Image 1 (cartoon, rainbow, N blue to C red):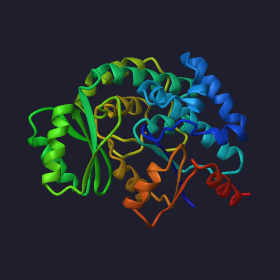
Image 2: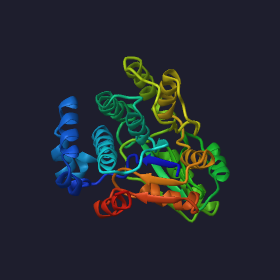
Image 3: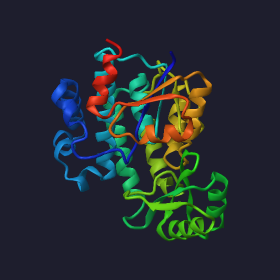
Image 4: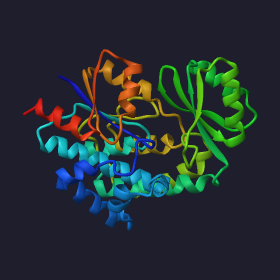
Length: 308
């Protein structure tokens, strides 16, 4: 059986998201403490108690999700869960996949995503950027709508057939949202995010990220990691580094990442991290492939029992 592990990005976080896991395993406690010391933030308390408005700040969300997802993967493997044959992550989750693959050291990964979040937050003044999910339109129509708008707006996440997230300046996103509705979109849902990720407004964040990544050691991954910018695995550290820089200002080709892994033999997927966002997208991308979300502790234990 060829197995792929996928790791969620921003939007999957919630206060208390790993409470049951913390009670069941010291792995989570240890990793949260380690990360808290690395970035001088009490992630343990924030993840457990919030408040949500603090957890949802980009520079805090990113390390909180990375640590929670890495610890979940480590615990699952420690308890007898199957090994990964391929990996991928949605946006921030790509860093989690790289840590799990051995390409990035855990400490470097935590510090990188914290700084990445700070850079992204600084790139656009609060209130000047937006993101919105467009449901029920083709990728091509959404791209055409964005091209017609006088302002910065573009597809940011190609999540699944019929679900694309757009990002850009607030006015341009609002105009594009209205035109998508006119084109027949089933729904357009504004997203509660603090920064408009994966568009040209992140150019300054990409430049800052390049400086950070040049100082970090990246190894060839032990397990192939399918990266967001081209939906292909990378083996060269330089290539991985370049793709991470582009990723912050380029669309996440999530649907293509999944189909690439299936093309290359993936038969079973595990969503490893809080929430079930990626499992929901999987059902829209390819229902024929088995997908299990490990973020619910009961589901996690049930799945483990299959490998005892």
